[in-house]
Image (cartoon, rainbow, N blue to C red; front, side, top):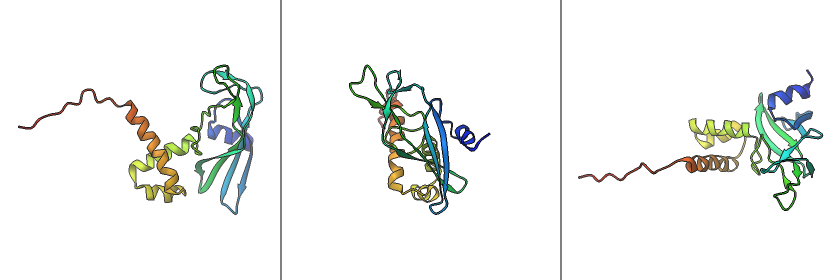
Length: 159
């Protein structure tokens, strides 16, 4: 198994994606994992699977650390041309939320840590400023609140 295949399996990016290069920056103590779309793969804009129209600008997504080193996914998300969308749109990524800048694995880890410790401690442990972590937590709290129903809650009058 090659290094790229090993990272493909470890990252679980889903179909349509592959790791094509891994670099370690010793100065920054950072593992850089370069990903790209698999030629001929279908991607979706949220409506249907479509062929790739083109690729956007190169972006980075913070991922969970590999050992003690900061890990970053680097790639160009594809844009797809959909019949229902008026313009080419960035495809949905199975491993990251739109505009979050973090992988879903990183976000899950951050939320689990935030349940057990203060955001200051989470920030220190993950090596990210708390102002970049709070929006992640707010997103998932807001999502959970949308799923809650308060229909059975009644006001009790104390006598």
